[in-house]
Amino acid sequence: MQTKNLSIQIEALLIQTKFLLTRKWIRLLFSILLGLAIALGLNFPLWSQSLSDSRPELRGVWLTNVDSDVLLSRPKLEQAINRLKGLNFNTIYPTVWHEGYTLYPSTVAEKSFGKMIRPEPNLQGRDMLLEAVTMGHQKGLAVIPWFEFGLMSEEKADLTLKYPQWLTTRKDGSSVFVYGDRGQHRFVWMNPLRPEVQDLIVNLITEVVSKYDVDGIQLDDHFGMPAELGYDDFTIALYKQDHDGKPPSDNPKDAEWTRWRSQSITNLMVKVSTAVRAIKPKCIISLSPNPKDFSYENYLQDWYQWVRMGLLDELVIQVYRSDMAGFQKELMSPDLIEVRKTIPVSIGILTGLRTQNVNIKQIEAQVKATRSMGFQGFSFFFYETLGDRDRAFKALLSSKNIKTPS
Picture 1 (cartoon, rainbow, N blue to C red):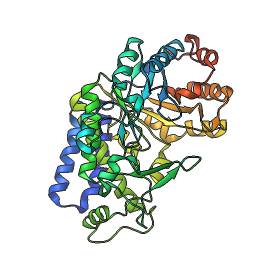
Picture 2 (picture 1 turned 135 degrees about the horizontal axis):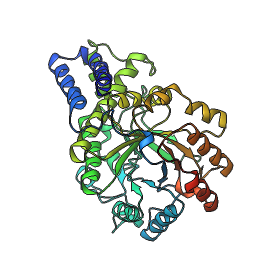
Picture 3 (picture 1 turned 90 degrees about the horizontal axis):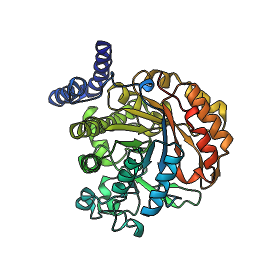
Picture 4 (picture 1 turned 90 degrees about the vertical axis):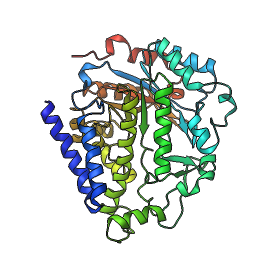
């Protein structure tokens, strides 16, 4: 089994090596050695780590600071944790990185862009993450901080204003993406190829891992970037170096242009995993992405390769579908069937949005489908939309309905 798994990892290294063939030989050698270090040591969990049949069912929920005040006071957070324990949840994913700010006191953030914590009055004078870890563990809940924004920031955040050169752009030079039902969110993406950006992301994550008794860390679909980005001067210059002076295609979906940019995000993921493992080898590295093809084609995020390289311990795939046929189709994807042989895979289920109610019958049906197909478990997005439905959720998560290891 170990020989087979090592061969898979070596195959993944060859994928990296193929990408680097156009670089100078010294850079190629460095990359190969780094990959071998990943495959052969550095305390990586590798392929023999426990799979879905040897861990309890994941029953998680994301705690946000948008359309929810659960994180904005200790009493509300304590009430939520007590409630979740009573409903038989076992994992919480509280956001800690949002719109270019941390939601916990961060020395790294303060040194980098001058703000120790998000300028939200209800976060001042307290350490929300320490509260969540302490109270969560007292109730037997796993606490996995969620670096929600990944490489994304808000247009007017202190980080963005201080380092505008860190941003990546579209072909026309624009960088802002407008989201929200009222166009209220204006987001930008930091360039994963910039060493300063890499250092910030790695240092924020390792700060949390070293400072707090967390059970893991989680990244999501924002640990990537929209496919139309990458046309900033810095990125184009690097691309030309690797392609004999040839500029990238004007088509953002061009295969080579997509592969090359995607590899830069993979390289950053290698740095994150290596750094986390060096500090806390048993720390769960979780990722909550979109389905495989959508992730790669639209956000340059090749999580399937990350699994093969041994960089992740857990996947929680976002399957936010309102029709059961579409939901079940995603769960039957050959990609998910394959990666479930390697690491535990759970399903992210939408329980509602501020602008969208989700019927409890749909939630129950999706949980049932997830269980019947043998997935590790599920996590609900998001806490506030559990609503006044405790009786239904408690029944759904009761001991008689919870999967036990086979």
